[in-house]
Amino acid sequence: MFERELAATAAAMVAPGKGILAIDESSGTIKKRFDLIGVESTVETRRAYRDLLISGDGLAQFISGMILYDETIKQATKAGTPFPDAMKKAGILAGIKVDTGAKALAGAAGEQVTEGLDGLRERLAEYKKLGATFAKWRAVITIGTDMPSQYCIEANVHALARYAALCQEAGIVPIVEPEVLMDGSHTLERCFEVTEKTQHALFDELHRQRVRFEHLVLKPSMVISGKDCPQQASVQQVADATVQCLKRTVPAAVPGIVFLSGGQSDELATAHLNTMNAGKAALPWPLSFSYGRALQAPALKAWKGQPGSVPAAQKALYHRAKMNSAACFGRYKAEMEKDALAA
Ligand code: 13P
Image (cartoon, rainbow, N blue to C red; front, side, top):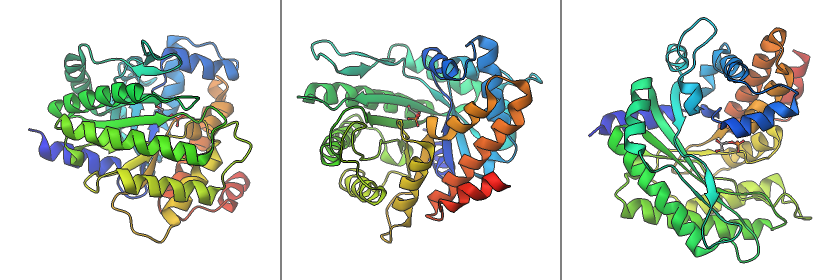
């Protein structure tokens, strides 16, 4: 069932030069983002902010889809058009975050497991009616002393596979997101080891649970030094390690890979993606982006909750989307940032 629909959606999500904009922050997370710019988080301020991101002119050249939150998919533009309809009109796919967040994993101090499987079949049917064509589930893996445990990896990939199977049953493309956190002082090598182990376990479990690799999109973290590691790996080292890790773990049948930004600065996230794509070796899958913070940060700063700043915020988002689109082709250069400022 849905074979053709799933294949078409997955192909559109990772079309050449296009990536995904994640605007699926939970109410708790968006409040933290709004606190930074001194904006109160209310149903209306959240709607207005998502409206400006969704309604920006010309974004569909660079953005294939946007991931919405439960509240957002039921909201509408200022003119009253439901967000999924406005996106469809603009040529942008609507996605939906369906996990209900990472919670403490019993018996494993400091580790987390993502929840949200209860009632998921029914919720997917509802989201599909609202216009969603793809979904997202984020698992969180923490690096630390004796962490991650095998137990934590297994619990998380099991849930990811159950989610992915339910999505495919519903005709919705699952984005499977095993995020290895940047928090900590670990080295690039340690991040490689944990990411490799996690991704192996993930594809093993997806296979066991009869998930079709052709009809999913992987959203991994990059292989990168921990935030507090004194020895920060170079852009080239991050790009090389990430590509090597993906080659070892991700089946060629997967239609595309879109990275999360995970707390990297916006320009660094673009530079890393660009360097991976500028590499000479042909890869079995397109490498693109599904950034939240690294796409939104300049727009959020420009907006500051002021209706008069909406055009400036939209321009900032357009610029970052354009830079990341260039990075999908390996054509991004740091000078392009300055050109935009001068424009
Ligand atoms: P960041 O790019 O801010 O990590 O967000 C992407 C995302 O969707 C995390 O689930």
